[in-house]
Image 1 (cartoon, protein in one colour):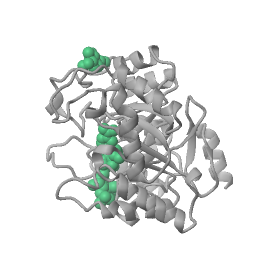
Image 2 (cartoon, helix red, strand yellow; image 1 turned 90 degrees about the vertical axis):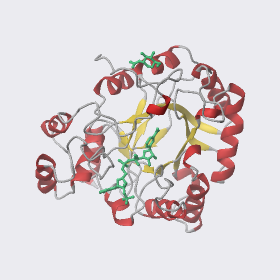
Image 3 (tube, rainbow, N blue to C red; image 1 turned 60 degrees about the vertical axis):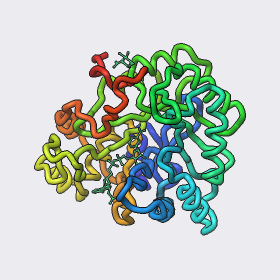
Image 4 (spheres, rainbow, N blue to C red; image 1 turned 45 degrees about the horizontal axis):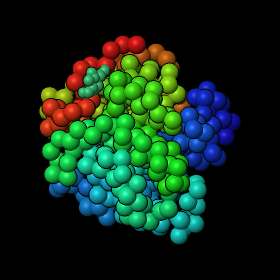
Length: 331
Ligand SMILES: NC(=O)c1ccc[n+]([C@@H]2O[C@H](COP(=O)([O-])OP(=O)(O)OC[C@H]3O[C@@H](n4cnc5c(N)ncnc54)[C@H](OP(=O)(O)O)[C@@H]3O)[C@@H](O)[C@H]2O)c1
Ligand SMILES: *[C@@H]1O[C@H](CO)[C@@H](O)[C@H](O)[C@H]1NC(C)=O
């Protein structure tokens, strides 16, 4: 406990209790646990069934996760809700101990579509509020996936209304680039509490992270392992799981290279969202709070940066508000 407390002080975060992940304070006063279970790839075609998501959520809560990340488009909100229900029924947690994040899909960007979309997510999740609701992507589409020209500032007004109604505690964005984040920030009553975007050793995102810190917008880091885990792209840039630099650090701390990469994101003040449906890996991915990387080690990992994305939705690259058009300028 002493070690954990010291570590958390060093992190500028504090533990809920010894067994759980620490939290970060959001700009609206709410607290967000710094490791979230990702559920986003549990429903990929040809991948595992959505039922595995229900079990993964229960397993995750059993080993101390208090934050679950889902989205309307993942088509697994019902399974996330069932897993949460299982954990509550077993007496592991109460609803108020958990932090549930879900996201608004691109075809619900009209201001008046936001509240109904969130109500539908809540119905599937079997919850009466979520802790965090994110605009999944700045780009709007029609129901058939073709481009729409809705301004995400209109969407943000719908998000503010959802918050006003008590359907969600904190609101934020995802995949917003620095121009877009700054624009929402400058022209809204309720500031985004979170921006969720890709951060990993090959996509370190220093400029966007720096802007978020300046604006006091917390960062959730998706695809946290980057190309460390097996990816379709055979000529993906390093590091892989057997990278010598990472293996050296893993041996030093008695951890796996995956844990080194997650801890790297935590040292940078981010909230990683590791996805797993495997019980051992779920446990491993939150067993991060009994060691600390040095500044030099953080710098070594940051040097892998290539500005190469795991998630690159190029199908939308010609749509209005497509965010990944240029590299972020240094600030
Ligand atoms: N906002 C957005 O647009 C957006 C986009 C992408 C992702 N996300 C969110 O971020 C989450 C994570 O992103 P992601 O799924 O792309 O990537 P990821 O978490 O970096 O990688 C997931 C892969 O890593 C494997 N894995 C997990 N833990 C491991 C470990 N300890 N050692 C080795 N392999 C491990 C998983 O397999 P097993 O399941 O077999 O362990 C899975 O194949 C998503 O689930 C979603 O919630 C959000
Ligand atoms: C963010 O996306 C918008 C819309 O595509 C684009 O105009 C702007 O240049 C982008 N900003 C950065 C920093 O990439």
